[in-house]
Image (cartoon, rainbow, N blue to C red):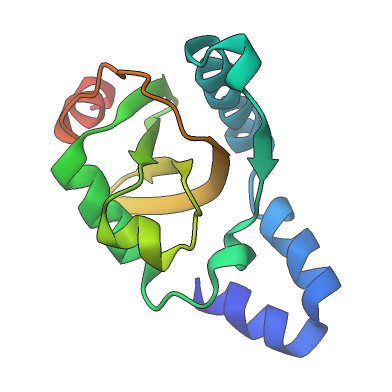
Length: 149
């Protein structure tokens, strides 16, 4: 995370945007596409308008990754894939919680897309869609991670 911030300060906003997108490996990107397909399957067709954002959109939040991980631990996650000792999952940040307000999501649902490898959690991307009452089958964070071990 520190390398990304330093890079964005030195290289400017345009290159910073590219660096955030480039931070995902091909495998990360492939699983992110699985995640976004899953989001769209669960939302009513007429309500789906994806508002793509990058992590740079949230640079005003101190410790975003830690806060989002704490939220994932407390609210549960959506398993995406277990591949080569990596676990991909998403967490949902909905209106009426502190992190949602801090992210300035204006009534949208945010899907934080994560990778867990070894003992490291990495927030890879955040997607936002118009808020909906979709009920997700959330699991405790430890469940998908235990399955990959």
